[in-house]
Image 1 (tube, rainbow, N blue to C red):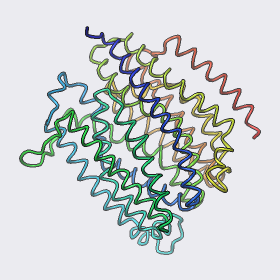
Image 2 (cartoon, rainbow, N blue to C red):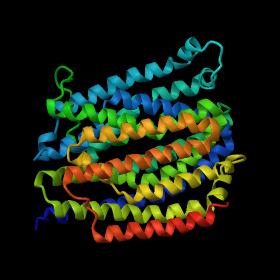
Image 3 (cartoon, rainbow, N blue to C red):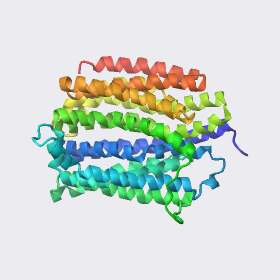
Amino acid sequence: MELSGTGRDAKDFRRGAYTNALGTVARGAHPALLFLVTNLYGASNWGVFVLCQAAMYILGRTAMGGMDRTLLYWIPQKSEKSALKGVPELRAARNRTLVFTILAGAIMVCSPRWFAWVNPSGASTIGPLFRGHRGAVTWVAATMPLYGLMEFHIHSLVSLRDLRVQVFVRDLLVPLTHIVLCALTYPLGWGTTALGFAFFVAHLLAVAVTSRVFAKHFGGVPGNGAPSWRLPTTFSRYARPMWIADLAATGLQRVDTVVVGWFGGAALAGVYDVVRQFANTVIGFRGNYESLVVAVVAGISRAHDPNRLAQGFSRASSLVLMLQVPTLALFYLFGRSLLGLAGDGFEIGYPALWVFCTALVYVACMGLSGQVVSGYGGARSARFATSVALAVQLGLLLLCVPQWGIIGGAVATGSALLVQSVIQLVQMRLATGAWNYTRKLATLCMATIVLMATVAWWTHGS
């Protein structure tokens, strides 16, 4: 018997919940392995790597042009899945992704020379840092095309409403391979070069896995005849504003680490990155659901079913919230001790972690409204919300980081995430004509705020 739209949505969200639970278990192992690496390499070397990584993600997202995210909207609009096998549009998008990320990687390889040209005196922190760690810069830059292909394959598969490959690759294969290889290569004495090399190998394995699954569902997008470059107008129209929104979102995730490193040096950037990893663990519970929600809502938008939308939004938001709340409580109560496990000096990041947790309580309660807007084709709305948030973040970073260090970074980024969430919530109301909060979700959000406010007040003095 064929399921109704609401029934199918519920089934997909339940399957996503099981898959997300697996990802949760995997992410739970990350801190222990990350602490092993930070204890071996120290805050300074880890800080060099995360600054290279931040540059790679920002350049990579610039080069990808929002094409991978556009697949989440474009593929569900196709009435027949079989019609997607080998289509020129997918081949063109993948060709563009590969070529542009190769060019961006070449730019990053040349970045140490660029810093030497613009700042020959070495007055800034970032320039001498990159020039002194060319091996790490080169390996991380070489990873960029692999990252682009991995993201293209993952988003194509998530558009079919299946999170399994995304969770396996992002939460298991890439981080665990990277950290294990870092530990294994440490005795070789390669320093930061080992961190970059392990990052490259992890993404090489990821592309091998995602390519195989992608070929199974989409026929491998064979390249018969001349290379395909042309994208349909509907694809490009959605991709352009999504590119700006995606680049701004990457900036929200990475630019704070760069600013902390610029003003405070590699060691402080290393400490801040570990704090950010804790915050990203909470955000990550939602991250695996975001792509699925866009794909599901893109299908709902064609049917114009407000009840189905409210039920789906509330169900997905509730499932994510129930994972985020216990994790936030854990970080409030034991964050200082957990940071201490990363090595000497990392416990100074606890006040920044407290600030992040406080902001993320309210961000969590605003649900997945931004993904609903994207599912309704609101790429321009997504661009506006994320661009405003990035502008707020940059302004506060330049104001707060020189004064308060990593606490200033947390204040700036936490405030920006709150601004973004509020704008997206209003945009969802405008796009769908409703707030889409069921009574059950509203009650859960109120209980979360009261509980977390109590925990935050109790731990404030520590």
